[in-house]
Image (cartoon, rainbow, N blue to C red; front, side, top):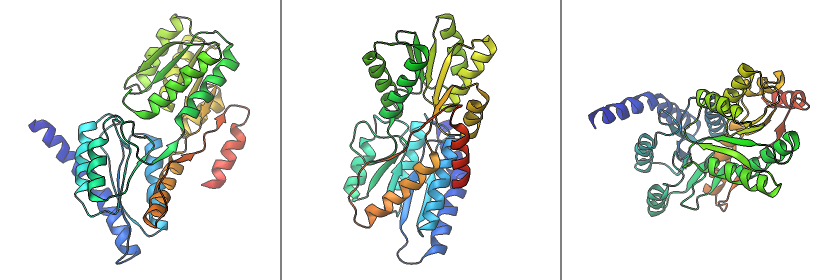
Length: 315
């Protein structure tokens, strides 16, 4: 228990510059009527989460809002995240945004926020056990897009598989559930579904096993998993394996350019962060809260040049 407390204190200290930065920016931007937004994300260990943070910080600054942003050590650190959420609920904020590590256990902070009359939102990852306004990808659409792509490229009835993240996170549930439904609808079914805390190395190992089982197509529910699967394909010389992944980060886009990834379904972290702050501010100004979805596009070798040019113009 003492070790856990020390770890949490260390995390709080590590996150402190973020808190100070957010508060300082808000103080400089306005005086009495600064909107104070608390944010608790899942991690900051990938380009996707760093882009979400940038989208939030830049948009808050643009609108003169004060942002306090905290996050635990990794996407599955539920207990660490709970400490930050409790701290946010006890602080002086006008709204709270959470990307829950566990989508099935949001009721405790949703109920407390409701008691306090505090507007609550989820970003990137929706809640499963509560109806909380959500800003992020429509992950059922993502799963359907992945299924359609694989069926088209490996053929109906071919063995396919899914490598996904933790089953307690809604984006995994939505992507995998819709993928399986769509594959069955098109008279094809995934051979295997792996749902746990998978990353690059895990996905690489899993892909090696799946290749031995004759799998022809793999849907990876994140870019890191997709890159791991691509590394296994290259190592085994399995050129006939088709891999599609999710997220819009530079290394994954480069992999599509080079042909090591066949396709990528976009999910702009920056846009999620941007839309999250804009949505909160509109609700604080009296607009009714509701879900806001970012666009998901299928990127392949055929259209990646156009996508990168468009992306570069937006930055």
